[in-house]
Image (cartoon, rainbow over all chains, first blue to last red; front, side, top):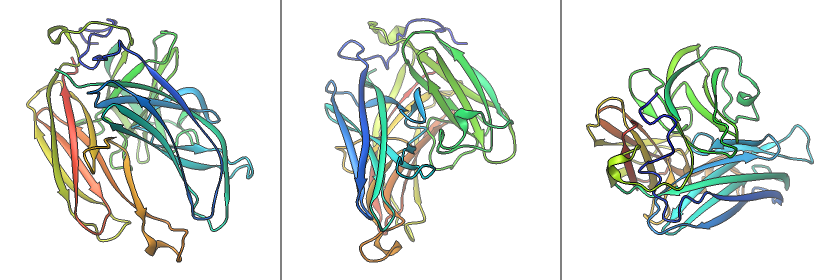
Length: 134
Length: 226
């Protein structure tokens, strides 16, 4: 263990200009995607100017509710297909930082030549933006 | 709380490491659960040294390294999971840090995760022969942070406006040669990035599968683990 074990954080990464606010949000996928189509759903957060990085975790309401996974280690996650039990698909998660805005998104592709019903699945996100001051 | 631990991936995966709970479910895995009992889901940083040679990774990208690390955080515990698709892997080094997200005043002298280097860089990623093949450019950033190997944060961009975390893909258009006219298509073009770090350098891997060379930008921060 390190010298800093069990101490409340005193980290360069804890440079929150708004006093350590943890952001939360959700994206619900429950749609019909046209043949060979794509679906993108995004949520946007206002973050302090100068924040250039973020730690983001998410859970999956159907497969791992309340068990949050690090988005950089799990950019693909399962997506319920309630019309075809056993035929659940997947979606891709992404994040974008734009100046004072942090966007989290879900992208779903329909690779088939017919419409695809996807969901319902809710993805809950926990976001901690920080700036790399030093 | 934090620590350097070792985890062996040498047993049948438990439910958290099986498909479809883990989209990259391994063949063999091992795990370590740390009870934090904070009552909320904390910030967690975790990295691992898959080769046991003091080269550390933060993110999982497209099976380029094995074994791989996944984490789960709940309101009471953090679970570190190491998985492999090959032969059993023993004693894989993992570093984790669990943060109490309190409101703490910071001075650089007293800070952990002390950032000692940050910057921006870019490079031209060579063209790829086809969309099924990724071309790569590796940028080397000297840091001389020594041992224990520092941590890092890394983002990348195609336009210096939208910044994506390492491990992700910036998705481009479909490769229309991979399906009938109008689709569906099986491949899309993308740009990707991941990093690794040792005692002396941060290595930024920029990748894409476009038919033309592409300039990709990266920004990074390197911090001491302890």
